[in-house]
Amino acid sequence: MGIGARITAIFGLGALLLSISMGGLSYFTTRHFLLAERESAAQHQAFANATLVRSSLESGDTQYADLLASLDAGSDSHSVLIHRSTAYSSSLSLSASSLPSRLRKEVLGGSAATQTYRTDAQAQPQIVVGVPIPSVQAAYYEVFSLSDLDHTLRVLGLTLFFAGVVTTLLGTALGRFASDRSLRPLAGVSRAAVAIAGGQLDTRLASEAADPDLEGLTTSFNAMVDQLQVRIEREARFNSDVSHELRSPLTTLSASLEVLEADRDNLPPRAARALQLLGDDLRRFQRMVGDLLEMSRADAGTGDVSLEEVNVSELVQRAVDAGLRSLGDGARVPQVVLGPDVHSVRVGVDKRRFERVMANLLENAANYGGGATVISVTSVPKADAGADVEIAVEDAGPGINPMERSKVFERFYRGSASGRRGTGTGTGLGLALVAEHVRLMEGRVWVESSPSGGARFVVALPVWTTDMETEADGHAW
Ligand code: ADP
Image (cartoon, rainbow, N blue to C red; front, side, top):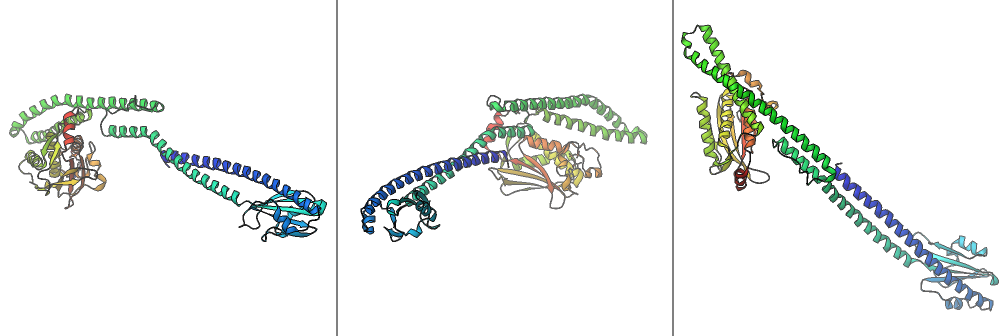
């Protein structure tokens, strides 16, 4: 059970226990009070009638039916008179044998008694008062119906039951509200953590708006992010400095190499071969330094992202042309397939970054998959709102096995296919940079299997909306 559910359950349970105890207390106190009152009224009436019966019998009156009829009995009471072992009743439904035997014994023993009873489980409750009249060898019983009291108590019980149900529901609703309120600050913490994980290192929790009870959490969370930011920026700066420092000697080396290469024909074969190896490694090294520099800029958040609104089909065509140009004359020319609804679709991209992404994917397709076969552009509606444009680069090579698909976007990851390449200039940074560029353009990239079993790299970019225009204008990248 989550914290929210637990708080709600505790409130609900608390309200239920409170309703049961308060309802029970009210019911039994009221019942006790009403019953005691009714008992004392019944005794009062029975004693008054017994006095009347005694004086009539003492005066020798034996008109029992008239005597019983003349007594002061309300509509809900009936009398039984036992005179010299003969019973007389004011009601046909009441006889001496239906009186509780314990009470009769007590009255026979000479003392007055009162008892509440039911003739059977379904019958209405009744109260009976027995008064001995020893002077004339008689006993007088008066039976009172408690049906009105029973009805009152039933209504009271029902009312208290519904009040209890309502109180429990209200308690549960209050618990829900309280749990929502108390968990709201944690939702802020989780949002901030997601933003930080997504690269927005300047995200902090607002300390002035923080709940005083959560001040400790806010302070330590912000302190942790401060430290994290300092560390990441220091590392990115270090990478950037190292790459910068390496660039100048590499430029000198490459210039010197060019001089040597110009004179290659005059070199002995072994020296020419060594020069070839040196050249390959130097170019690879230069490329790695360039990629590292770009990566450290992205890490430090110093690389600018300037989103522009462009037509997606023109953008893709231009980027593919540029990518193929950099691959050289022998490169395979892929087929560009535009979906039916993408001709007029516009996306917000940083053109330089997009061209880097396409160039990288085309180069990988050439290196590992025999060249890109198809570049497709399709518009895909999103579940929430708006749409994405998916630009896919397919090849007919060996593809990437499912276990490797998320790893290929990691830095310095060189998959199993890299062993088969001929050029040997890979650094393992290409796809990591692709992922970084796409992320900065608020898109997503993934790899799947192409219809021919090769690799299919998909870049999804959000379709341009007017909100992005304001965001692009005011964004501090
Ligand atoms: P690099 O190309 O420098 O090795 P990348 O980050 O560009 O680094 O690619 C990482 C790994 O992903 C490559 O080493 C390769 O194994 C695999 N890979 C990338 N593109 C493809 C592709 N089109 N087909 C098969 N494997 C690929």
